[in-house]
Amino acid sequence: MTPLVLASESPRRRELLKEAGFNFDVVPVKVSEIPNKNLNVNAQILDIAQRKARAAFDQLKSSRKGPFRVLSADTEVIFGGGPLGKPQNREDAYRILRLLSGNFHEVKTAVCIIDSTTHKEVSQVETTQIHFKKLSDEEIWTYIDTGEPMDKAGAYGIQGLGRQFVDRFEGPYDNVVGLPIAVVRQLLAELP
Image 1 (cartoon, rainbow, N blue to C red):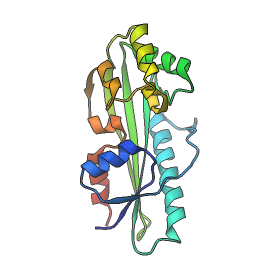
Image 2: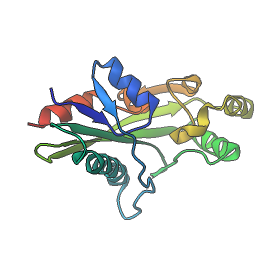
Image 3: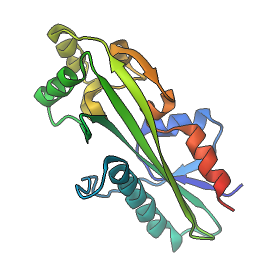
């Protein structure tokens, strides 16, 4: 099997890949994650995942011997037609969680894989719909005090304490954590 390289610093993505039985290296890349406002939401998220994959591919192609495949992903929480992003501070986390309280939102993850031999690039967006319980101010501030929401799109982690706010969801759970493994397998199968 062609060696896999994960272009992400996310410990959650690493954990999901390990649990799924993948062997991989990690090469974190820094690219702008500012969405292109001229694109629709799916295209914005795909664009960011593709930028990450291409940056890692460019970084590796001269230094790495033998074939490899770069895997990248971008996850966004979508509410009211636009991405919520990661909170800037405690007040922003409160604002985001207040918006999500008692409402539906979507979590979208774009996955992109580039094969070093063929330079073929495959990508896809997976969507999970989530319904939040109605939250009290006390619940929100208690959660913010844990620090968990501060580095997460949508200001919560479904795999952590944020799970208590989720009433129900439709779609893959691992997509909400940050990497839909079924999509990864499907895209790898599309490569020669």
